[in-house]
Amino acid sequence: MSTLNVAISGLNAARIGLLTTNHNIANASTPGYSRQQIFQTTNTPMFTGAGFIGQGTSVETVRRLYSQQLNEQVLSASTGAAEMDSYLAQIRQIDNLLADPSAGLSPALSGFFGGVQEAAAHPASLPARQSMLSASQALVARFQAIDLRLAEIGQGVNAMIASEVTAINAFARQIADINQRVVLAQAAGPGQPANDLLDQRDRLIADLNTKIRATTLLQSDGTYSVFIGSGQPLVVGTVPLALQAVPSPTDPQRIVVAVQTPAGGAILMPESLLAGGSLGGLLKFRSESLDDARSDLGQIALTLARDFNAQHRLGQDLDGDLGGDYFDLSAIGVTQRAGDLALAIASPRDIALAAPIRTATPLTNTGTGSISAGIALDATNPNLWTTTTLNFVAGGYQINGAGPVIAHAPGANIDHNGWRVVVSGTPAAGDVFTIERNSAGVADNRNAMLLGALQTANTMAGGTATYQSAYSTLVAQIGNRAREVEITGQAQQSLLQQAQTARDRMSGVNLDEEAANLLRYQQAYQAAAKVIGIAGTLFEEILALGR
Image 1: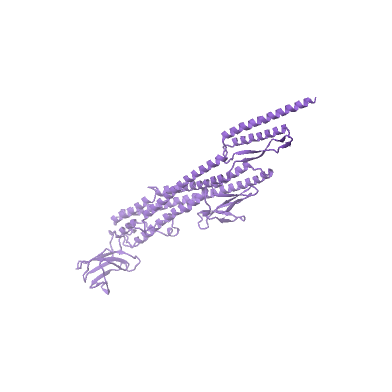
Image 2: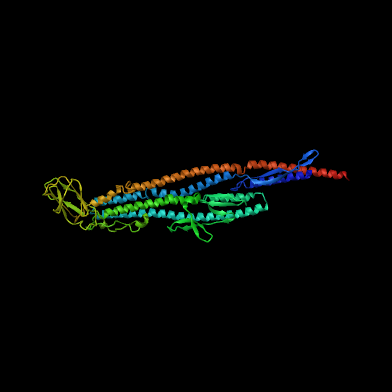
């Protein structure tokens, strides 16, 4: 090779170096761009009597500075951070809703039982009864409002799931298209990487990972196969598959993710396998927090209504009739949604504040025995209102003065005809106690007191919590989970920044370094051009010698 050819090889290498450096500078702010670098090699030297003489240089390839390991670390941190961000944005809505000191359930519960206590203090007062009824309506409205808001959040999650699925499908199509272009590009230049196309594909995969955790497998033809979940293919070479957002077969109001089959059908994907990214965050939020919140709220509403109904049926209203259901369970008993709770009564006269029975002690009794006011145990007993006497004799008592003698222990419960009384002290033989219908008991508040006592009764969580404490536990659980998600998200963001810094240290464009490369390649170019000029001068002098 002549001096001129050697100089031209150096000139070409410097020119490619300048072009590559210029390309790096132009894409310094391009997301996902990996810095490119030329790799030169010396040409095969020529042997002469004086030894091997160099024959210049050639550019072997232009490669991007890229680490698969560092890129995978960025993808892992990115999909985790996106999942936590998505989860946190949703759970904050529930946290703010349930913990609101004015719009939450706590003030409505307090107001409801406050109304019960007011009615218990004035059982014959229609205004007091109306106040209790109004507080009951406010409680029902609050249950309905909170459940409606939770349902709206659920509908919003449905819409976002559908949107994320659409975005994932779009990324799948774009990745498949890039795969096709990579195959064509690398076929046109065997052994040479299509750097910019590879960067574009990696950027799409990075964007896909913000939607759902995805893994890739490099194929022999240079394409990437992309998998989600537990290995569900999303892109196979140049063929994209599609996800679908479809109504759940068990709950049409719930959108789930399915894989579209070639025949046009859909195969549901277990949500536990769709982890990572904003889609994974939405699904995790719904299954872990939203479903629990609606279920727990519904359980509080249903338990309160059942307990209150059971006690209300054991009372007597202002017209002397036995109490009926206070809350309507026809809908909530099936759905167990707090939004389906309703009142069953509309008139304050129908509130059963009195007990349906009363007891009497004749002045002629000579013993020290006394009888309690009595409570109803079974309002369906046909003999509940049948007047009954307890006639004490030696060794015990008889019902209505006849039949077997029943042994009596002072303070023990006496249950009969659907009621319960307690006789304390020591009745004398011949003493009589009467249990009868509580006629004209408009001022009686015994059942009202029992209704009010439900406020502090441990009827929730297997008999370990009140309605208020059960709701407080729900609020605390959601609040704690929100803080856990926030802390985890911050940790993921920190990991993401560290991973990006490590990757950018290798793949990012350093403008100071590129400026130095420009100067270096410029000098190399100028030097090669100078050699070409000298070679031309020498050639002209040789020609001149022959003239």
